[in-house]
Length: 230
Image (cartoon, rainbow, N blue to C red):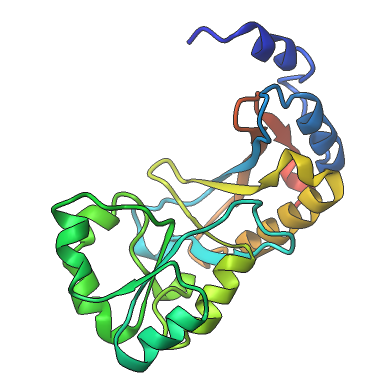
C-alpha cells in the first residue's frame, strides 16, 4: 500500500524496531499526527490467548477518566418506566419492537452503543445478524444489558469504552484525541491496560501481552514495551 508523503515523513520519526516507554510513545504520537483534523489515538493490543476457546475470551468495558473526545449516540431498548428513565438520562434513541423493522429493513444504524434491559433481549436477539458483526449487540459483561439504564447511559456518555478480541486475538480501542495532550492520554491508556490485565483468563498460558502499539488515525504505529505495562 502506497503511503502519502506526510505519512512517510512521520514514519521516519519512529524506530520500527524499538519498544518505547509509554511517555516516549505519546510524545511521538503528537509529532506523527499528520492530519488537519484532531485525530483519534488508538491502542492495539495483541494477547497471548486463543479467542476460539470460550475460557480464553477477553471482553469487558472500562470508563476512561478523560473520555474519548467523541460524542457517543446511545440507543436503549426498554419499555414503560425504564424507557422514561432512559429518556431522562439522555439516551439519544429509546424504543422496543418498533425499532426492529427500521434497523432490519431500512438499515438504520445512527447509533454507537446499544443498551437493553434484560426483558428486551428477546427482541434485541432478532437483530443479532445486523448488530453482531458491527459489535453493537448488548452484553452483560460490558454492562449494556442492565436494569440500571441511567448508570449505563451516564457511564457511556462519560467515556466508557468496550474492549473485545477480534479474530486475530487483537483488541483495538480509542483512548482519546491528539489534542488531549500526553498526560490525559497516558491516564486513559493506563486505565485501559489495567482493565485488560485484570481481565486475563486463568486458562491463558505464557506471555499475556504479546505486543502493544499506539497510533493516530492516519499515523504510523508506535510499539510500546509490553513488559513495562504488566
